Length: 127
Image (tube, rainbow, N blue to C red; front, side, top):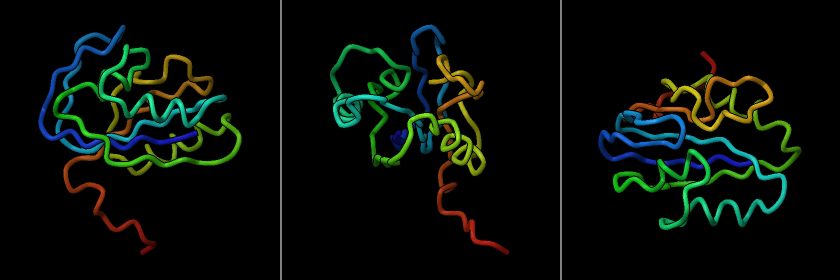
């Protein structure tokens, strides 16, 4: 499984497959996905600018204001994708409903977390 971290420089309206036209606020987005086979090929594909759009994240990454800034690979069973997603969502400022979750077996609301500008700099240490 993996997380692709994307910085969106400014507000954008993006047509995302069957989800239609969506408004994206500037900030950082974290997409959680899995590739049961071909993880490195999937990541390389996600990071290419020009490609046929197959997954919801492809539409976001094709936006001229979006820039991938990191990838996190989480080794282990791909079935834990939703657990990783839930951990990311627990500290996020929001999400994009239904984004990347059409095949989710755990009924996640979304697999795209949103962090407002400056949101990732918060201190999450125990108080």
